[in-house]
Structure formats: C-alpha cells, structure tokens
Image (tube, one colour):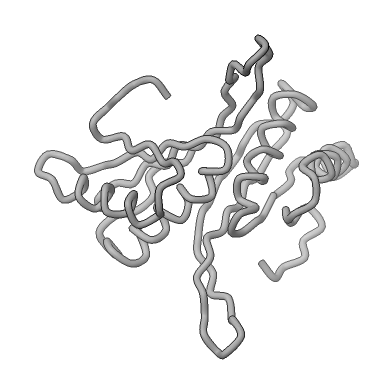
Length: 95
Length: 95
C-alpha cells in the first residue's frame, strides 16, 4: 500500500461516510472513471461498507464493483517481530 | 445466507483458527474441491483472515481464491426497523 495513486482511497478508522464522500467526489471528477479502496486488518469490514453504500445508494446504477483482491502484508512490530495482516482492494468503476 | 450447502462455512465470532480448521478439513475431504466462506458485518475482516491463512500457510500452493463477492442484506431490528449490513463470500478452490 505504498503507491499514492490519486484514484486510490485508503480506508482507516474515520467514520464510514467520510470515505463514501471521498469516493463519490472522486468518481464525479472529470477524468476519473474508477476508484480503488484499500484497507487492512479491522478496516476491511468498513471498506466493504463503503463500497456497498456507494454502489447501492449514492451511485446506484452508475458504478459497479470491477475487482476485489485480498492479500497479506507483513507489519514490523516493536521488538523486531513481524505480524501478518490481511488486506483488501476493491475497485469501483463507472458503468 | 439461507442455503446450508455443506461446502459453505459461516464465519462469526469464534477464534479465527476454528474457521481455518473447518476449511482445511472440508477441502481435505474426498469429493470437495472448493469451499465458500460467508460472513456479514464485522466478521468480514475475520473471513479475509481465514482465507489468507489457509491460502498462504496451511494449503499454500494447493488452493487459491476463485471468487470474491460483496453484497448487502437487510436485517430486521427490534421495533420493526431494518438495518443494512454488508456481506462477503469468498470461494477457495483447489488448484
């Protein structure tokens, strides 16, 4: 999750509607017809909520899920140990 | 999430490893070459963890993610109101 593509939105611990607004704003901009949501760990559930709220409520019949990918990432922890967290990427695309 | 297909595992609030064991057991049974994980709400993150642990650790090079679908479901709440929750379905399949 290092590339800072302008069409990528990183979902974290803010309220769901903050991310929904970011996605809708992104997809309404000229030149953007898709938007990728990325998250890891507990924020994965929030990411699915964001995608579903955009797709079923705010941009119904306008966008659809293009791709969903899951993966794992190694996070360095204090003491030199690493912890594995799951990740998700959901790409929404205008129809 | 009403069909009780024997190859479907519903992920909830038990420890992650319970579900990992269920998936591995399922996929090692004769006649089963795929397994679908279903969950809703906060358990979505756990479901991705289960899929990733199976795929990257216990059955590495044996199974892969075949399909991921997200959706929404209406849940009846006390007082006759409904609440929408997100859902996920991840299908793991032997290579």
